[in-house]
Length: 157
Image 1: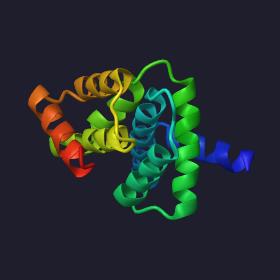
Image 2: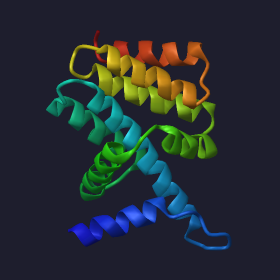
Image 3: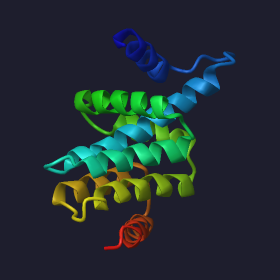
Image 4: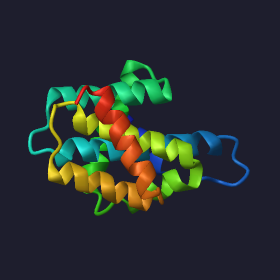
C-alpha cells in the first residue's frame, strides 16, 4: 500500500519530460492533485472536518475527473498528505494557472465553495482560504463572488 501510494505521489509530482509520450498524463495527474489539495484545504479549514465535507470532496473529484472509486480514494489520500506538508498554495495554484482557462478556474473555486457550504455554515477561515486561492488563480472579485453565490444557492443556503 505504501509503495503504491509513493509511486502515485512520484508520478503526480514528476516534472514533465519533453518528448515523453506520458508527459500529458503526468501533467493531468498534477492537475488532479492540485485540484484535490485545494478542495482538501477547504475541508481542513473548518474546525471540524465533517463526513459530509469529505464526501463532497470525493464527489467533486469523481465527477470532475471521471475516476473510479479506488482512484478517487487514492487521490484524496495523497491530497490530504500533500496538504498537511505544504507550506503554501502556490505550487498547486501554479499548476492550475498553467493548464486551466478562466472558466475552468472558476469551476474549481465554485467546487471549493460547495465543499465549504456542505455542512451548512461558512467559517472565517474557509472564507479566507477561498479568497486566497481565487486571488492566486488571478480570478476577478466578481467571478469569485458569483461562484460563491452559485455554490450557496446549490447548497440551499
